[in-house]
Every structure is written in C-alpha cells, then in structure tokens.
Image 1 (cartoon, rainbow, N blue to C red):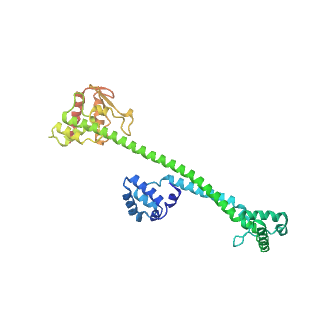
Image 2: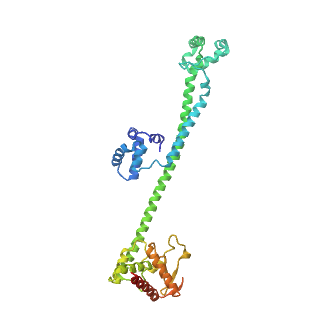
Image 3: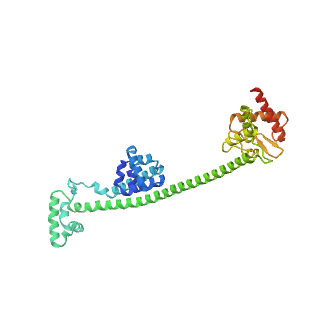
Length: 362
C-alpha cells in the first residue's frame, strides 16, 4: 500500500474519488475480495459511504480488509520516514538556524564583525568571489564596483550581503538532500510493503486451497458414507456386518415407543435419521478413536465371533451412553469383561433382555 493511500484511510470516504491511484487501488481490493466487476464494486463503495464515514470505515462496512494489522506497522514506518527526513533537514540547516535574520530573511552582521577588514584587503576579495558564485552580475570591474557599493550599504544597515545571498541556496540544498533521503526511504518502504502484501496474498491463496481440499475431502467422505447407508437400506447387511451398538440402542428405543412397528422398519428409520459421522456398523464403530473427554484406557471393547470390536462409548447421545453402560454391566455379570470373546447370539440375547426389562418397566 502506497504512503499516500495509507494517509487517506482516516479521511472522509468521498475524498478517495479525488485520488485516482488510491481509488483504483481500494476498489481493486473490493473487486478481489468480494469477487465482483469494477462498476459494481464502485457502486457498493458509494452506497456504503454514509455509514462508513471514512475510507477505512467504508471498506470495513463492506467487509474488505486491506486494513489489517500490517497497516499499523506501515503507519509506524511512515512516521519513522517523516522523522528521519526532518532530522536530516535539521542537521543540514543547523548553522542556518543559529544565524540572526531580520523579518525579510536577510542575515544580520555579527556583533563582533570586523567591518574594516570586510570592506578591504583579502577578506573583501574572498567575499567578492563568494558573491560572484551566487550572482553573475558581480563579474568584471563594473560588477566589482557594484558589489563594493552594495556591500557597504548593507554593512551600514547591519546586514551581511554575502551570507544573505548564500542562505537561500543552502536552504535549497538542505531541502534537496531531505527529498533524496525521503525517496530512498520510501523506496525501501515500498519494497517491504509489497513483500508483505505478497506474503498475505500467498497466505490467502493457500487458505483457499486448503478450504477446497477440505471441502473435497468432506464431500468424498460424505459421499462414501451416503453410499454405504443406501446399500444398507436397499440390500441389508452382509454376513459379517452388524448394526452399530449406537444404532442398535436407537432401534430399541424406537421400538419401545412403537411396539407394533416391524423391526426392519425401525432399523430403516434409524439408518435414515443417523447423523453424519455416526457409525453405521460395528466395523465402523470399532474404527472410531476414543470419544471426546474419554481416554482410550477407559473404553471397553468386546470381541465378537466375526472378529469385530464393539466400542461401548454410546456416542454423543446421553441415552445411548447410559444404555451402553447397562449393556457392559450385564455382559460383565455374565462373565464377559473387556476384550472377552462374545458370540453375536449372546450379544443379541443380552440386548433383547434389556429391551424386555425396559418394556416391562414402561
């Protein structure tokens, strides 16, 4: 961001229209970040001006953030540039500031000036040469006499003619030097801000790529899960597939509320309503890691005859977790502790016992 653009940030929003370069830069950011054509970006900026107030506020109103944390850093750099330029000019004009001048900017004679020496002898010749460097009108004999007369008049008035002629050139030289320092520092500033902008742009592009990658991965996972769900609904389970413990609990709970509903219908409804990420089969459930807030050592796995390990954390639904704790306790009563081999017949029988108990107590 250029120095003049930064200085416009806290100006009234309409002022931006008077600075074509800065205007195009800001509208370009609106185009890029909001992904819209130039004319629409201009229209959006104009409509946001009343509420935004300043250039900074209007862009923020649009949700456009070229004004991130780097702006503060850039403003500090600009302040540093101004301070260095001012210090350079101060150093170059230190002697000038010590010179006494009148209201017209003429340099006054020092109180201890040797007026006689200034008007004759070697000192007069040196002063004449200095005056000729400032003005060509003092060249040759006529110029020499002209300078002698004017110098005398100024000395009689308490003014140093030669220093008065030299002073403006020295001020111009100091300004030129300060300008050179400013250009050099601003060039370095531009290089640094452009490098930072490139880093920010690269970060933004990488973030977009990561977002696209994550979306693609999510779509792939969702598609695979949906395909499996449809297969289970359309074709039923394969020989080695058993409905996950989480869903079995939900089937039992559903049948408790709908005792006349066939088991297959209850299972179908539970499968259709299962949230994304919910394990559909015992194999899915076994592949899940420890649930949030529970360590792997606190979880209990039960080995079935088909080689599947049943995770008994009960998912994220409190009722499911409570039923799984009851199921684990019942299996433990029957001699099946963590890691024990449980046949699918025993597992199903235990589930039916719990269902019967729930129905009897309902």
